[in-house]
Length: 302
Image (cartoon, rainbow, N blue to C red):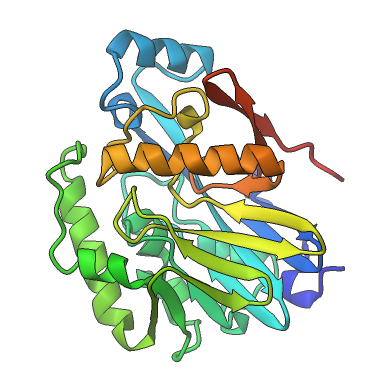
């Protein structure tokens, strides 16, 4: 049973779609929360893709021809008396995208007091993962000594980031650099650095994969023979069918392909649940499909 830390209230009157989904992984409580959606240019999903192939994929997904609406998901995990928030959404950084930055209000709607969070995990320092921690409506309500677990390689990279292999939309490098710098300056004393992996709560293990960013990490939940992996940005929705496509935000595109293919093969073999920051809300599974993969959406339980 979910206790009052993860209780389910009625949706707010101004919320027209579900924004959270609760499930259990063995004895671990999990709440998937949508921070909204990010509409970004179509070219960002496949910088090495042929325009005709990208257009065909978007059409097959019944998406607009000039953009793709990236979901933006975070999760809250309760295990062994600890409450772990994994990633923080975008906050108020993308003011041109009013469909994002909903984490604080959706935590409140779910009955989660930010002061009850005992640990924070950051998969990587892109603005849509740390921006929520820079917004006053969430930052002021967190514990002042909240430990924030993040790979040491990630923190080191953002001291002098190299964007030479990215293909960002105009203006994005400045936003990323600014958010990463402010995050480090604000929370430097709270950062709990690790090299390869760390267990932050019983059955909750963060593991560095690299690829998307040098310190990019995933989080695996294991309890009672059940598993769920939060993939961060290792996999975007188009990567099931086209794992070879480079995302504009991949700092090492070739390594990103190697990492995502390895993760998808592993998850297909285990048949475990997956949540990813930019894969359709709330969760699903993956299966091998020839030389690629297919996403199996969640069957919602009411």
